[in-house]
Amino acid sequence: MLNPAISSRSVAPPLARAGDPRHQWPGYAAAKPAPAPTATSDLPWDLLLACVAGYILTCVGRVHQLFPMLQFVRAAFLTYALAMVLYVVDRHPERRVRPVWTGATKWMMALFTWAVLSMPWALVIGDGFDLVFGSLIKIVVMSVVIAGTIRTIQDADRLAAVYLLGATVYAVVVLCRFDIGAGDDWRLGRLYYYDANDFATFAVTAMPFGLHLAQRGRRPRTRLAAAVSLVVLSAAFVHSGSRGGFLALVAMGGFLALRYTAVSLGARVCALVVVGLVLLGTASQRYWQQMGTILSDTDYNQTEEAGRLQIWRRGVGYMFDHPLFGVGPANFGVAEGTLSPFAERQQFGVGVRWNAPHNSFVQVGAELGVPGLVLFVGMIANAFVVLRRAGRGNGERGGPDQVPVQLAQALTASLIGYVVGAFFLSLAYAELLYTLIALAVGVQKLGTRS
Image (cartoon, rainbow, N blue to C red; front, side):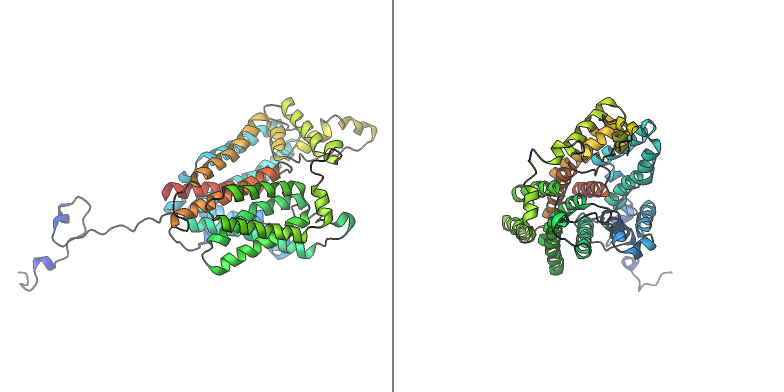
């Protein structure tokens, strides 16, 4: 017989599923599952996010080449290999593959597939194999991992900050280790991995993140560090002496001034004034003379057979001569040495320079044919489209809804810097492009959940 001191209401009911009649018991309250994190939730760093950050620092920022100890421990390999393994075994609901399997990712996968199909038709198959399976496959897979790793807006901001950090550390090291002199030594020469022109474009793509974090950094020290990074990048940019980089800076700065509406006009003007003052304060007369030759009819790029305009014309010719599969991945230089009009000089003992394409779009068109060029342009265009949609937020400035708008517009500025800079450089398969694409996909994923 039950103890009369114990009432029926004091007996805890057994757990029941939704719809069970026991839900009608007085005082019964079903246990609610923990809410899934939203796009603005704060989640701490974890090992996967740290490995992705390490990949960006090494494979984009090249910090392992700046500090030999990191090469000794094979930091680049360890970070991306561990990141891929951790992403496969991660069970976090926000890190599924399906949300990142979207437009830009599909274009990127199609581009990689076409590079694989083009490989058997390459002039030198070994060169194509080394690029596709030695480098490009890792870059493409890590792009998916980067986008998939992002759980919240804070994660996206963290990776943008890591991208900015990598560019800033690179800038500081080259400014300290490479001297600028007179005569032909007025600009930075060959650097680590990047040459001066490549680094200029890298710096331009990182600057919008500096503006974003200087405005939206959660801590004062973060905002201060971002502002210092803008100054350091501007100074190193001037010493690169890159004309293509200068055009990329102008295009990126124009977007920030006119279209970066997520940040107040005063903040935009202030940032551009800081960059402009650094340019004026560090640029030599030789620098401005170099910039003045951009449209010169006597510049070697227009007059010599190894100049950019002549190389571009030949590259377009290779694309039309091999319209379907091109001359093969990483085979533009081979085409210059075997198919160009002056290749026959070699039989007379005259050396022929196997030139780089010096234009990422010509590079893809010549090496992967017309379909490859369409896929490459489609991938970048789709990234711009999704960022434009994400950048139409209507939250109040400073509110949580405004954060993805700022990052989307900062990424748009970075991609504009890449497109203009890459028009003069061979960066079609560079990690920095696919990292920016991955961040754009990550922002799109957050936008669908916020």
